[in-house]
Length: 582
Image 1 (cartoon, rainbow, N blue to C red):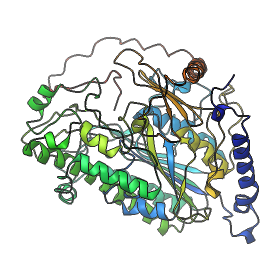
Image 2: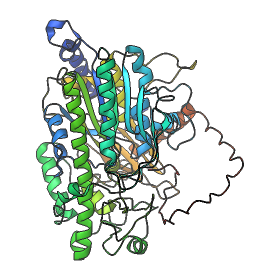
Image 3: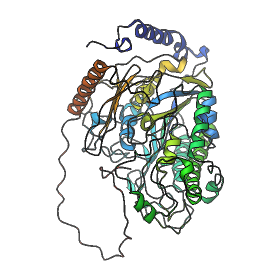
Image 4: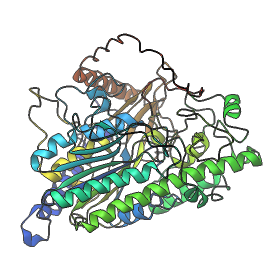
């Protein structure tokens, strides 16, 4: 393949020098971590805590420029690393497939969902349990190709939340693959607290019965995913904080991001005409929610006073959910400290995609007379605040422009990291997390599984970056979600925002200077567009072939008799194309 830009060419001296830097890091900086005991390195295999937020924007956390109180995340960042260019897949379930399998979701029938994972595909515990690890899961699962976290995913214990529409009284959850009774309405239950509680219980059980073994805890919060629901006292902490509006919040976040060294791009303009195709129309929003709702990311000063108050309250709930999640994460970290395991626990924190511009109603519907953020309300963040949460990037969850796919990554490991409060600028992707864990644990990803030989893991271990801010050589990073497509090679990114049922035109950006994606260079570099387009199509075809054909759908069988129970309240929804989309 010929390269239209020198940064493309793996033979280019800059990339050869980068590879040499990685080798130096491996030989010099990381060797002591696995050396003799007198080196001060941990003798035992490290534990792993993998914490995933749900629909949290790139700049929501304090350590990524946000004004939301996240002291536990901030302490982890101050004592470890922050990655500036970590990428998700832009949506909940494909991102979780990447984290847990190490493959692009398209390689394992997970985007779009097309049945069970291929027979050759392992899940994280299948690699780690042979090395003596105990594996625990608490929270969201959403890996439809391996629907049971214990039986299919290999976890030893699991609290699996299947109801993503209720934070105070979820109706569907599993404990070790067995159905739990629904949580009654009006209790003091809150999902984020329950997810932490189960994680803590699993850790206590581990300390009592398996103290000699390393552990993995996959802690998958559903915050701050819609519906926006949080305890009243948490909301009150932010009640008036966001009355200055999304434009002012966005500008202040951008300035903090630049001061922190996390970004060096321009701030793109708001895009008021771009919303998810399944959102309510503006008139329906007002009818279903009330006169304070706003359907587009218009200028804050164009809103009425009533709209400003309502929108500020919505962002206060979003902030409260993140604040509560951080405190619950803190309780889990305290339990690990109580086990005297904190020093040798690798903590990884990410968000499954960017903040969401969706505005829909599910679950039990929305009661306009209920307090905002309560169990009877069903509100979404919407495009105005989503634009602010994804500062300084363009677009939102489900798009593969930077706003949809840029994720924070905080890494903390006292026993294995010399760095404290440093940044890492190499591009990385969720497919890199499993190879990183496997290298740190001493696991091997090669070999057959269930009689089949899997393709090589597409990700790269990030272990070299734990010692120094070095590049990780790779050929490309790939995205495809619905009609949104992208591929990144070096600093070049080819990206397309598709229409509802059709691909859109390619845009080309130099992310070395323009992560805000404000200067489309497609017309200036047509050869580069053609080359990257060919590479994207090659990857897409190869990944679909590796996944194999979709599983045939099961016959629906006989229809179930109609229930004589009280009918559920009618709800009007904006519905994404995928029936499992959350």
